Amino acid sequence: MLLVLKDVQYIRVIDMETNVKQAEYFGGRRGVLIIDKSLAERLAEKRVNQAMDTGVKTLLALCPTCEIIIRDASNRNGGKLEVKNVLDLLWESLST
Image (cartoon, rainbow, N blue to C red; front, side, top):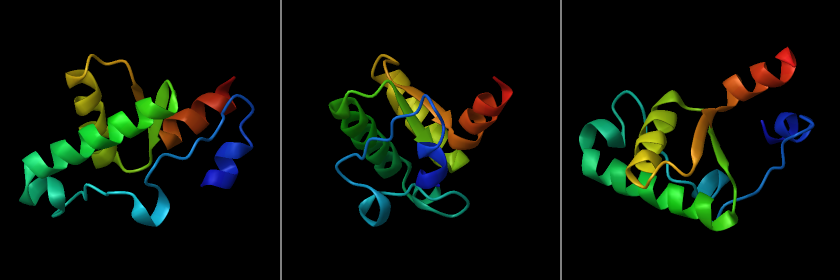
């Protein structure tokens, strides 16, 4: 997916402190969100803070569950970080 994103003209990919295999995943279906909502919220806030530390304006998520919980965390912190689904961003880039 990163290779595809790097080919979109106006996207600059920036790695956060934890990424790929070290990234925390909230797990849809029967994952962390279902088992321990407060843990999922803390992980999302950590992720928002990591993203903001890089200076990015937009955080991309591929998983719809991650997108929702990270957006909620961003909104709780003043909504300074835009959260988008990767597929929506790719669609937008094809539409322009």
